[in-house]
Image (cartoon, rainbow, N blue to C red; front, side, top):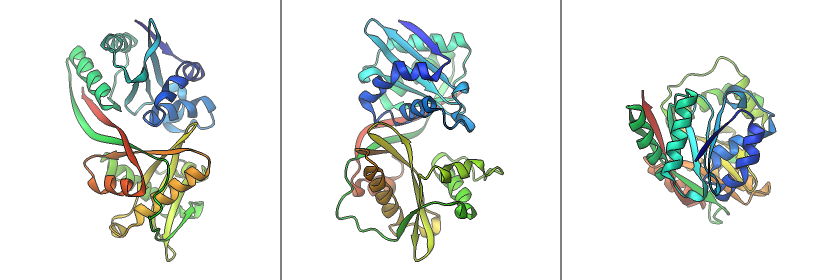
Length: 289
C-alpha cells in the first residue's frame, strides 16, 4: 500500500472524482467539496482548499481509499466500491501520523467510519464517541400526493433580518453548537447570493427555509432545512423540502440527496413522505483527545 498526500485540489479531483462518482449520493460531502474546490469560485471560511487535508491510499488495483478533511470539520472517507481494506486504513493512519495531522473526528459511511475510528483510536491511545447516527436519503421524484402549504421563493438580501438567526438555529439544532450569530454578514450573504437558499412564506410570513447545496454531476444536496419552533408541526418543512427538491430536479439533476439524524423520527418521516428513500447509514464520530 502507498500513501499519497495532495497539496493541489485539482490533482486530487483528477485522481478521485470518478471513484467518488461510483456512489455519488453517498459521497455527497466529499465529492461536493472537491467539485467546489476544483472550481475555486468560493474560498470563504473552510472552503479554501489550501487548508484541506487530501490523501489517497493506492494498492495493486489503484486507489482503494480516499480521504478529505476541510478543517475545522471531520475527516471524510470513501473506500472504493465500498470495499473496506484494513491494510489501506492502517496505511492511511500511518500517513496521517507521519504528517502530524490531528483529527477531530470522522464522518462517513457507518461501517467504514467505525472501522477507521477503532483502528485510529487504538493506535493513538485515545477514545472515541458517536456524536450522531445518520441516514442518507435520495429522491428521484417528489410524491404527487404532497399538498404544499405556502409559497416558496428565493431568499434575498432583505431577508437578512432573520436568515442569520435561522442559519444558526439550524446549526444549533443539528450540531448543538450554541446559537451564536456571526458579526460578519459575509457568510449569510454568501448563502443568499448563491441563489440556492429558499424561503417558504405563508400569508406573507416567512415560516421555513431549505437550500440546494453541493451540486454534483447528477445529484444535488438539500440541506439547511429549518423551521423556527413557533411554526413547527404545521407541515411547513414538508412543503419547503418538497418545493426545493422539485427545483433541484427541474434544474436537471436526476436525484436529490440529504442527511438525517436517526434520533429525529419526525424529519425521517417527513422526508420519506416526500419521496426520499434510504441508501445507506452514516455516522459522525468524535475523537476524545
